[in-house]
Image (cartoon, rainbow, N blue to C red):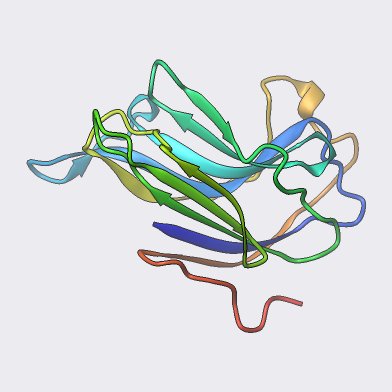
Length: 172
């Protein structure tokens, strides 16, 4: 699956220690009746995020006991301030006992990061379930919170089975 959207951090945005942006989530589907499990212990999330100083990352939570959190793309891009940025993520899930997963990130239509062997899956029944749409400062304590009121602009969301690519006329 592929995801594309635009994000704009205002000129005075406080990145503080880090946070998370929208991205994919996945859940276990039972094959018999295509019913899904709603427990987060069975799923995964693969979301864009930021660290101190605006360092861009992809933050993945998984149900894998051997690797519950994966931070990808460290030190490969930095979020610019006061400018619309086209972000895209492509995810191909691995299969049990055979890791052929893939995570690709494009920033402003340029490949910024690629991870072969991306491995969030605990079962072949786990599938991408949709878009997790939340923006949060994260880390488990108040020290991650912004020191002043802040906002983030988001626009141009699209998902698809093929790479979506940037809009012909990006947001103003």
